[in-house]
Image (cartoon, rainbow, N blue to C red):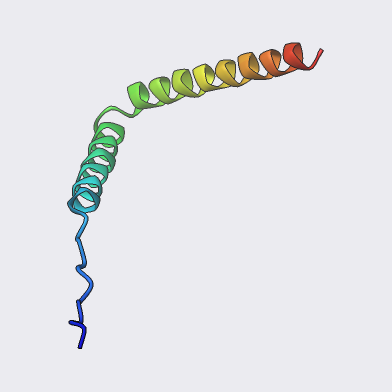
Length: 67
């Protein structure tokens, strides 16, 4: 008769670590927005401007490849 084996369930510790890091980042962002709202808004405006320019550059690249 063959022996039955039970499946081994492995827990992912990186999931818990990721949740803790994400929570700390969100709390840190919240503290910065509460303590220095003008600087946080300026940073957000600059970051979204940079993301917009990256999007424009990728669109230009895509159009250049298509032609």
